[in-house]
Image 1: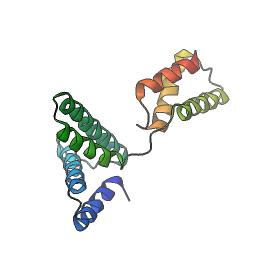
Image 2: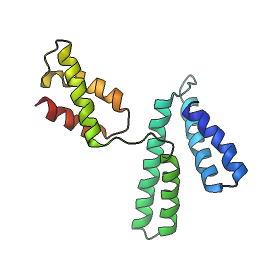
Image 3: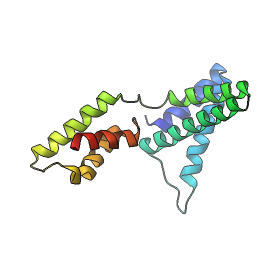
Image 4: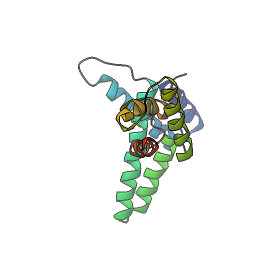
Length: 153
């Protein structure tokens, strides 16, 4: 079952259970997915990686809005935005710890060295390409870059 299918199934489950906040939040996310799929010259079907990226942006958007509401003294609105962000984040893959990313970087570098590639700062692009595919939005990209740079130094 794809992530989009899971969201669609959960709409029905939330509706039957009477969970209004979850229902509205999931429907809004599905609306964003539909908008993204239909925008452009030709409609496309988003894969799980694209849906995950979109959901990460939606959660971040809600957290940012909550921060703005908090600064403006609107604590009830901020709490509502945070509640929506938590619901969205429940669908996202578990974030990686820094130690996990360091292990992935080390294994990628070892694999490249095992293939006979001389690994140095010039090969950062090759290392980043493989590591980014493995991390797939579960860790901050800038931090991944810093970890790779440190490992190659």
